[in-house]
Image (cartoon, rainbow, N blue to C red; front, side, top):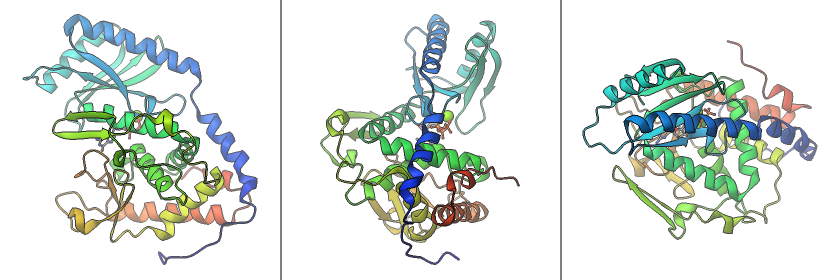
Length: 337
Ligand code: GTP
Ligand code: MG
């Protein structure tokens, strides 16, 4: 079933560009949503500033990395440079403050893997998660946003892939499938690998942006306005790329040996990273290296059961892209268990 197959791209693939672009455009958040997010951010800044004047708030995740859909929740990081902060206490205090300012559904989740306060703002109708000092996420958000500026095909491909993953139920880390962040990294890697390449490898270029956070170095070329047009020698269209992406993950990725790495713009071996065996809960059944935290495998959530689900979904998508007359309908058909 998982045999490698060499398939030729269907002849009428160009006919599918318009519907894919239309789906992409329908998912882009309208400008007024951005304005509402800013409004909520300033409200939160005001509330937080009363208690912690030196603290800062950053939007990260899909609302800031340019891969967010319309109506998504916003992720906010509270940066507070207090050496002896107890995160749980801080979150509980923050939750109290927010509650007394009439924000709704305020809830502190102090035991989560990333502890957060959740809230809903009735004025803007936006839900939001606030975490503390997760500064690395702020910088990987910037890396993704910078990649998105180089070639519009990244944003198009990632929107289609995320929309597919959400429709098919394979964007649920608590069920062993992949995060949106992992899917975007898969898209960036895929476009770095095209020949000629559609995206460069920013971390292999001259460093123009440098920060260290918790001993992790985030260094790369971030003057991306100078890279617009980088991929113009590659004329592949969105439909071809969607087809190629699913074909790669269905039939060509070597799950037994390979690690995809946006950091190096190449494929690394599991052996070189010592990701060949299960350690604790990390099984490394599909390996996606975090661009900054290089010991971190975003595929760690995938287990024996969910790898099967994922690979069957990749194959299903590849088959639809290959044979279906109207793939845009079937591809996003909701999965009903
Ligand atoms: P949607 O909410 O599904 O639209 O996507 P999202 O981009 O907000 O993705 P997600 O909720 O998966 O993650 C939010 C942000 O958290 C990402 O953009 C990353 O910056 C960060 N993040 C998520 N997972 C990890 C992880 O495993 N490691 C690190 N370092 N950061 C992560
Ligand atoms: Mg999010």
